[in-house]
Length: 134
Image (cartoon, rainbow, N blue to C red; front, side, top):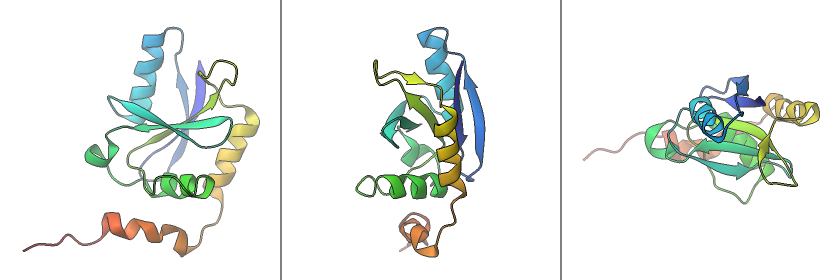
């Protein structure tokens, strides 16, 4: 079993277990955890990746908490992320996903619970601002 953490668009962080006995079960489990049909990977740390909906911009809503967490860790990366995110560890020898270690899990939870200032959410205005009409 792969053990990771999922952050939904409401900012709720929860534990996830994914059956990884076969490649098909692993991919199906990751798709189910993220809520998508195709996913992409974003580097979070040297040992943790975040798997996200590859079509999240079109299919989901802004994930403010995930975006703030990623922007803090990767300030030069993409500005906003949409849909759920799945945190999994990286096997450095193979590049495959693996379960989060206790320390990695604690680091993600620490980042998630870190107090944030209003300026960290300023980016979101462009994604949730009023819709212009003619």
